Image (cartoon, rainbow, N blue to C red; front, side):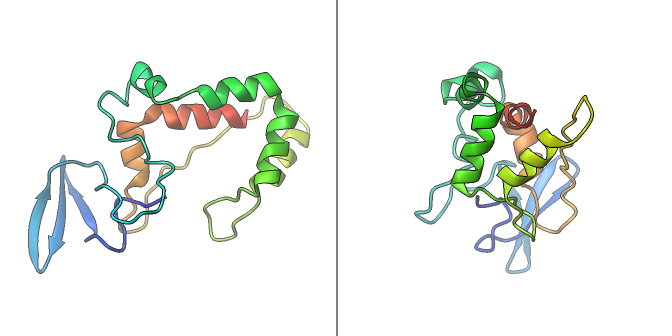
Length: 150
């Protein structure tokens, strides 16, 4: 996923309700808090549909296939979901790149109920604005992801 503070774009800065970038020593208002369109041919994943009008509402999310993965996950069940994650070799985005299937299996096997999902949208590093953009413009993507984990 390309983040809105990509290396090929000046780092965005939020001041109040404005998003600004500094280029060549000049501060420019960014028209939108949405990330610019991916300038390279690589496929966007998390931000693929975020620019679709109405995406932040449930009907807009569903128009682009939102919740289809959740419906499939409910249909095939938790063990099959974990198997697919493991087979796909999906890993976390943190520095360790921990295997997601292994993590989900460990949580499933852990003693105790209920189990909880914690969403860290801290954005504590300079140039990290993907969390805010997702929460503002594509909240159902976050909700669907969290439900998958349960």
